Length: 192
Image 1 (cartoon, one colour):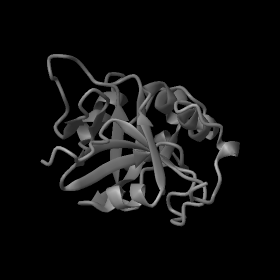
Image 2: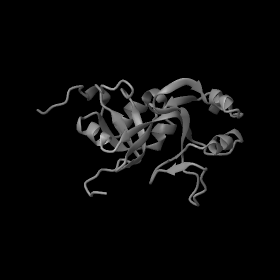
Image 3: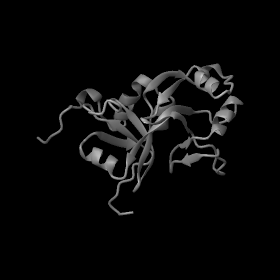
Image 4: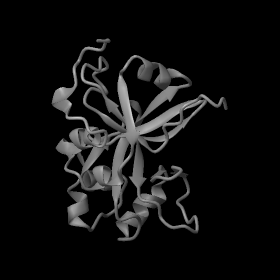
């Protein structure tokens, strides 16, 4: 790994106004992994029409917690949209994880195995979760190129924005971590 390579793991990618890719316009992405092979993240502010209750029905599991069942499933990104990704707070320091869990250094965990859904169904499992269908992926160097074209700005992720902030406020709150008011952002890039 070269010493000048940036690592944006556990950061928010915030789409700049004027993002040409409609898929990501107005998005906040939590980056679960960023290394020399590329990047993987989940969009945290684009709910889809499916609720967690609907999702659990589809996988033939009960979800007795009505407030959780009413929560939306999110569009995590354009890759593997038929697959579920569960972003959740770390379980414990002993490393007890689910079958397929990616522990984000210094951050959250992302699980793709069914056992996390089974735990939630049984009233166990992580208390704070965000479930997406699909993820956002970038090939080696692709994200760096998009950053160089001013497509995104980055900031250290704040779990409370993912789990506690109303969905429609997540973009503005993520920008506020940088002290930026979205109305001040221009769609133009350039130099004075």
